Amino acid sequence: MPPRQVPSSRSYLHTYLLSQMASNAQSHTLDTQHADIVQSLLKSFSAAATEHFPSSKVGVFPTESDSSIAILLVANKYSPQNFWNGRWRSTYLLNPTNNSVTGTIKVDVHYYEDGNVRMSTNKKVELSGSNPDGIVREIAKAENKFQEALNRAFSTLAEGSFKGLRRQLPVTRQRVEWEKIAGYRVGYSQKSGVSNSLK
Image (cartoon, rainbow, N blue to C red; front, side, top):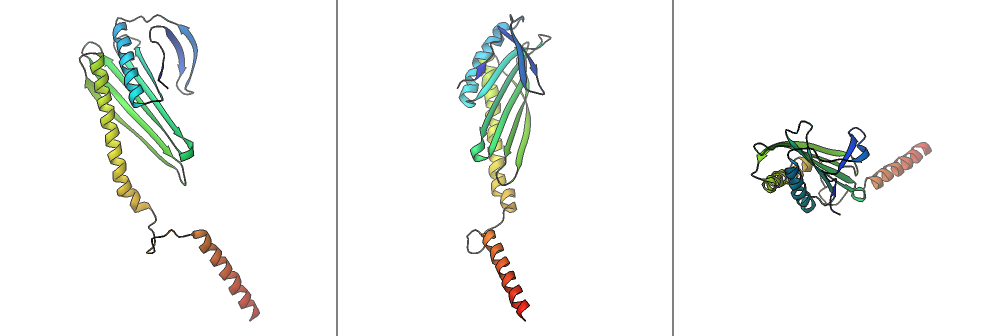
């Protein structure tokens, strides 16, 4: 499913950040001196988002003062059958006078099988490009680089820190069936109690 695009030149809606709800959608003419850049960025960024984030939402909007352009991406992935979910959020501000971009990438992953583990991280980025397509390429490079760094960190954690936290297998290299051991202990206690009471 391609990302849902809100055409930047035709729609206006009120967004409530705390409840993450949008309402009061109305027609709106894009009133900015950077309308062509906004449309070009929206087209390029939507294509890049579709390639890397299949279930994402993108938006490209001029800021209130018309001095910069906001580029937004939100991608959610839910996997309740595997007990995890995650969210990727990227926000960028483009200064159209010098094509410099500053932004933040935020990743939040929650794993909740047999415990509750959450990873929340963010990275600030600064980049530039010569045109809208170049800016989107630089954003994609920065996001890919961040994703690769996260992958390396996860493999390091799995092989190092998390491995040290896990209960090690016994010498037999088989899992200990704690339920059976508890049952044996209860049976032994009852048997001991009976034999002690007979004495």
